[in-house]
Length: 250
Image (cartoon, rainbow, N blue to C red; front, side):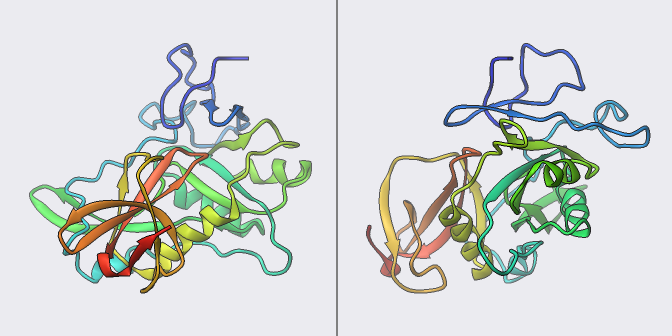
């Protein structure tokens, strides 16, 4: 088996455009290759399309002082199923295919979750807010995956694979991490990506729309801080602005 790398990075040892990217996160993980039909869109058919896990190019991302319009752009796509809680898995997509994969999974009866956030983009000298995936290249999936479900999910066009060691051992994201991300999205607070953070001042939010959440606090300005939340499987973090008066030591 190939040496595994970090999410979002290309495998320097592979020269085949059809080889799926692999990961090393808390153990040895791999991504199953997606079998494509003759009309499928992917690296084998589109040389200008890059593999998933690469950040969407967004210029001038801001959080402090962002307008309410950003809240409208942060609405998530997909809902969790009712009844007993299913495990959370991660679908890896080709670049800019997150919405395409999410829509197809929903049409097939799955329960994807695509958190989004507003970000500033400057193009041709014009600056505007756009909606971007909170974790570019990834869609969360809230379903129990047996072999049949795993095969069916992988048929979605634009998908690169499902993180894990195969259909019988897909990687899981803790429920608490997903609920924290969902609470941030539902809060409609300005959000921005942050470098993956594992150490720092651990705090608990005691008031406001993020009440009950725990994360790492980063100072932004005298009266405001940034609460950093992470999805450890992806080694990705996001931050939401909080008031210092709403913060207590965890």
